[in-house]
Image 1 (tube, rainbow over the protein chains, first blue to last red):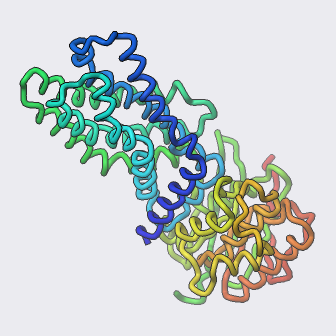
Image 2: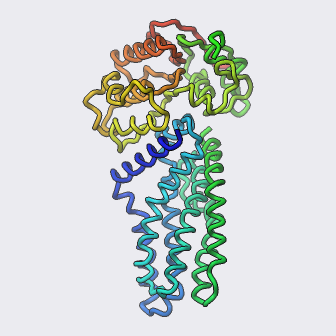
Image 3: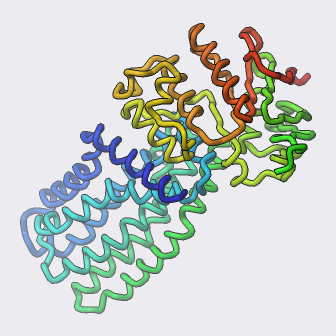
Length: 223
Length: 210
């Protein structure tokens, strides 16, 4: 039962994405904008840029994720789909997990794929690229899972833009510190695996616990 | 499954919001092959009663038993199909795509196809129309098609007649009748002006609490 439901949800989300492909590009365009503006503002000196490249990239990815967060459950809450999720014979947490991962794959994954190009734009030393990619691959799903809890808590509110950001940022800070920190560590010649392992551990825990917390928050927000 | 136990048995069910009683306590059983007509004015708690039964809201006190056993989310999901005020349709998907998703979520009666259900509710030919282009009545009909495909024996219908034309009202009655004949049951809320389905009905009158 849980696989047909997951498949139906993924197919629905991909169809919706295709119908509104203009909207789907927004997070990626936003991140591109931030990176380009930073590159312009800091000047074209490669040495300055390469020092801040990893940090700028991570902030761009994080902010664009925050921008996309509000769409995670809002539409489904407003048209009553969420009620039907709660009444379905599969656990709500499972549907939440599938929805969050689809959302990650459609909003954050394109950015991760584009990251090498953006890194080139910011003159990130090539040697640090593998560490950056590893931190993005571990960190962005973690951001999505944590963000889902916050999005669920605020789903009952009509206008929650800045509130989502305020609630999510404290949860996002450790992810940012460990991921940008591991790239910085590798730039200084230290071993970056510590930070990456922390991210991986966080991701493992969040994969299990975040959907449960999100499901509980959705039930509360919707009652 | 002992036949003597009613499909749904509600005892002493009460719900209040911010200390104000919304409805109850109410007691009623619903047996297979039976429809319960929940009547009451606007604000009498009909919708809230259905949402509590569906498990979307927690009851203050009272018990809800399905086949004599206390409800769990799993038994609820297997027994109940809920038609609320919100249609749960995605405006950017076609009618058939919407139906496909909801069937994937809730499961589907083996004997029915989504196309067949659309024909039953009078939406044949609208399979590829986007849900945003359907009228309110047609959306309601699409939700009825979802219900028709659902394997759940107990239908919770919240104002199923709203937005429907005369044929639509008759369609709801016909569907409830067919569903009951197959051993299902239904709870139907209405504020009383409409014709009730021509089946064995029990009446539950909800009054606005003083």
